[in-house]
Image (cartoon, rainbow, N blue to C red; front, top):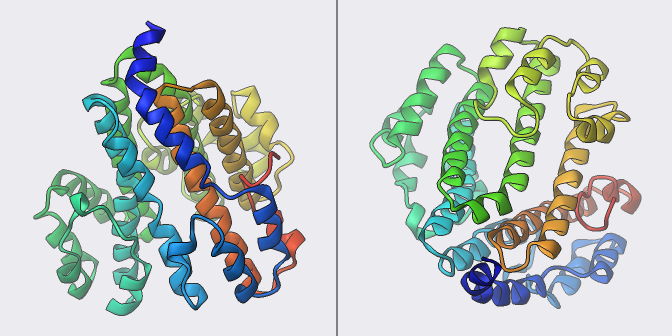
Length: 345
């Protein structure tokens, strides 16, 4: 049935070819890293696909670059059949989730409306929420009340129940992740078999990344108990199974947790890591490598489309790190250590 997949995704493949050409080239990354100030980086970016979003100063430029994330996803969603479109739409809702987290975190920390508004991503109009009334809410509880009156009420009610038992910011973040990823997995399972197989690897790896990072934060940073930690993990799993996670939550140090990972490829990837930050960087690099491989071998499949979205997410993450690192006066070598997708690691 390869000919059928070819026909279904021929237009998407052509569109992705044009989008891929917009990704930053190695030479442009070298120029951005070598720049000593935003003014020099500005000139580099003005010769790239990011030119429309380059502003006179760094902050609005960073925000505009982050806002560019949803545009390719929307183009892909409009170009694929109904079930893949639903999956891509669900994938894209992570930006909506980020905005909700930003809003609730801002309310919990007492930030001003203007500060929170400046941190929100520009979303597709289809994801409309009453942002202005939400920004005017005096606290987290009032914002949750208003969110319960939206189409996201089933997510928000469940998140609120978890938050009431664990009234912390990381508890709220975890609650939203615990709701998002099972829904993404359900949309994946509804795909036709060829589409499902084409994207399952990338989704499984992201779930592994999320579960491992939450597990490490809960156990090592927040010192939660093993049962509390396991309860807050995402209730769907990737390559690292639920039984393996039950073993890992009982470990009490980073080396012990890494040594207990049952997936050899992931364990080998992380065995040199000495901090949670290093683990996060290595997991991002792992996912970037997978996406590059899928983009090459998954031509004319839904996997090619999802791989591009992962690579775009990685590029925006790296570009933000370069721009912010330069502003802080970090050495190019130190900035490069934070990058996850610029060059194969």
